[in-house]
Image (cartoon, helix red, strand yellow):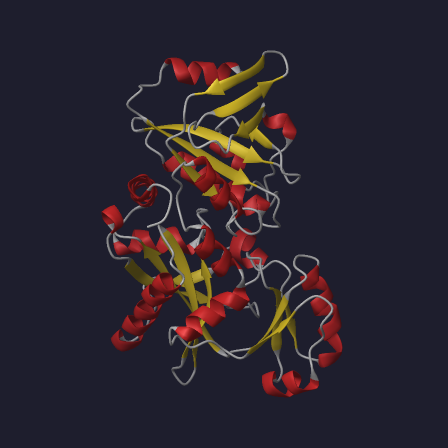
Amino acid sequence: MPASWKARRRVTSPRKTRVAIVFGGRSTEHAISCVSAGAILAALDPDQYEVVPVGITREGRWVLASGDASQLAITDRKLPEVTEAWGSAVVLSADPTSTDLTVREPAEGVSDLAGVDVVFPVLHGAYGEDGTIQGMLEMAGIPYVGANVFASAAAMDKEFTKKLAAAEGIPVGPYAVLRAGVSLSEADKERLGLPVFVKPSRAGSSIGISKVTDWADLDDAVALARQTDPKVLVEAALVGREIECGVLEGESGGAPEASLLSEIHMDDVEWYDFETKYLDGSRYSIPAPLDEATTRKIQEYSLRAFTALDCAGLARVDFFLTEDGQIFLNEINTMPGMTPNSMFPRMWTATGLEYPKVVDRLIRIALHRGTGLH
C-alpha cells in the first residue's frame, strides 16, 4: 500500500465521511473527467471528508491515485490522463455486505481499505455517465452522487432524451436517428434542411460533432461521429442563442431547484466545440440577459426535464432560444462538467451557492438517498 495512503489513514478521524472520487474512464471524455475530479478534490473540506481518489485508465483499469489535484489540471493545453503508473490496482466488490476497496500492491500483496461511505463518480460519457457504474454501485450497495441507472442511460442517449422530453411537452428540434448501417433518407434531408449538426448519440463535450452545410459532406460527418458511437443523430440547425440551466435536487430529497441561467456567446466560432469549452475559454453571461417570462419558462422546462427522466442529485439542461422566441431542449447532462470553466458550478455560484457547498450538498443528498428503489 502506498506510503502516502498509510500516512493519510494515520491522521484521519473515524468521524469523517469517506468519499471515493472515481474519474478518468474509457470514454472520449476521459481528460475532462480528470479535470472535473481535480476541482472536486480541491473543493472538499479535509476536516469533513476523507478522500479516496480512484482513477480509471483508458483501458478500464482502476488505480489508487495520489489525490494531487494539480496532476489533474490542463497545463499548457496538455490534457491529463490516468495511467497504470499512477498507483496500485484497485478492485471494488459487487458484494453489498462489504463496501471495501481491495488494493493490490505487487510488493505487499492484497489489502483492504475500510468501507467507502459514498462514491462521487465524476465520469463523463460512456462507461460512467451512462448507467454502467451506477449499476455496479447499486449492486454493491454503495450510495453515489447523481442519477440512477435509468436516468443516466436515458440522458446519455440523446435519442431517448428527446423522446422523453417530447412526451413531457418540452419542445425539441427536428432530428433523425441513424443506427448502424443506416443512411439519411432523401425525405429526412428535405425535412431537416441545411445546415445540420451530426453527432454521436451517446457522447458529450462536443466530441465527434460536425456542422454540415453541403449534403456532399454528410457521409464524412457520419463516419466521424461513428468513431465514437455507431448510433448517430442528425439535427436541424437551430439559429439562435444557447442557454443553460443548472438543476440541483433539494436537501434531504426535496424538490429540485433551478439556478440562474447562463448564455454562451459564440463570438468568432460557429458552434460550442471542445476547444472553446475547455482550452480557449468561452464568453458567457450569468444571468442570461432574458426577459422574466422566458427565464421562468426555461427554468420550468429544466425542472420538468429533470423529473421526466427521473434524475437525481444534479443535471445541466441545455436549450436553444430561436430569434422568434421559441425554446427547444438540446440535451441533459446528469454529470455535467465540474471543471473551473464549466457552466454548472458557475451558474450555482452566481445563484448564491459556491462550488464547495455544491459538492458538499451533492454528497449529503447521495448519503440520504442511499441505493435501491425510491
